Amino acid sequence: MLHTPRLILRRWQVGNEIEISAQYSYATNPDVTRASGWAPYDDIEECRSYHDKVQAPDPECFAIILKRTGLPIGSIAFKPLPAAQKLPDGGDPAACREVGFWLGEPHWGRGFMPEALRAMLRHGFENLGLSTVYARHFLDNTRSRILLEHCGFAYDHTEYDNSFPSLGEIRDEDVLALTAQNWRERRKQLNVPDAPKHIGSGAYWGSDPTIAKRPQC
Image (cartoon, rainbow, N blue to C red; front, side):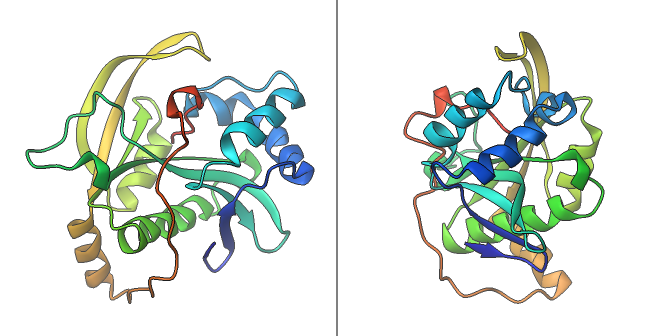
């Protein structure tokens, strides 16, 4: 469980109907889902199935809970890098993750996503010992690009003709990266203290990441 001034990041809970209802209310909005590479849910049963079978069992998929209400407003997760991901010479795929996230539209523009992403990065670099975190976004998703750069990510490469079956589309994506060294240097410049290492878990998207939808940026 990760805490920020306004948020709690915690594991999703199997069978939690309040969570399922909240997620469904946001994930029927194409402005939320399409930027993440998947189509809006057709019905709440589809949402429930994904929540209980994919999202909740994943130890590195966190609900973003608004402290004021105790309700989820989005999601953020680490997952293994795609098999085709190219790393710098000497890069260890086991020490790298990709971060993805989505936020319900009523909560856009309030700084919640940077707050959640900073907490997730701290978890990854300090508690999981990651060396690099990657993130990706569609080329026209300028909101995510601004957010990622604000949190220290820098352009790494562009991937062309990626397939998104849920959308029935082929899209190009920019991939950005943030190394542990750059993250620590950035925090030192901002004079942010380190946190105690009190959280530990396996940093995997799921037992079979190929079946999971991809909540990206």
